[in-house]
Amino acid sequence: MDILTLDYVDVFDENKSKKLSFSKELLDENINESSLFVLRVDGKSMQPVINHKALVVADLSQKDIKNEKIYIVYYNNKMWIKKALIKENKTAFVSINKDYSHLVYDFEDVHVVAKVLLTFTKL
Image (cartoon, rainbow, N blue to C red; front, side):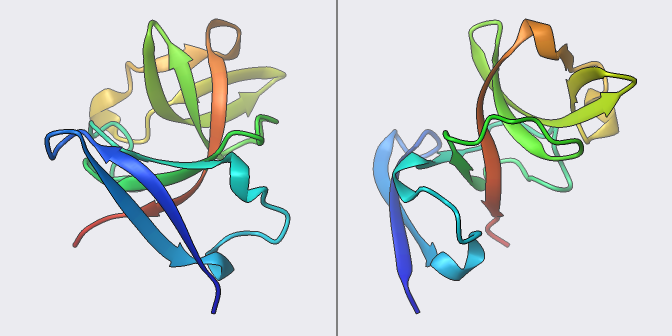
């Protein structure tokens, strides 16, 4: 089994540099490994799919928007993780958690950074 290891900074642990290792089998075959990165989630707007403090693996090379997929977008000087919704030729990025339903960003107002591929939550 091939293992992939990615570095990340843990904002919840004094910004310590850490590593996430996982099986490459969890990824699609056509992934460019050099485009992958890890970040720790700060917030509950994507629960229960992505939990607060979860680790997500994202791909900088995947920016083509697909309906119902999850992306990291840049909006208002912050990075947000949101689900893409395409309806009637209009694309918006939305929260999954109903308590954060007010966090909706139009495609025209954001910069798509990466597509989220995996999420890891400490149970």
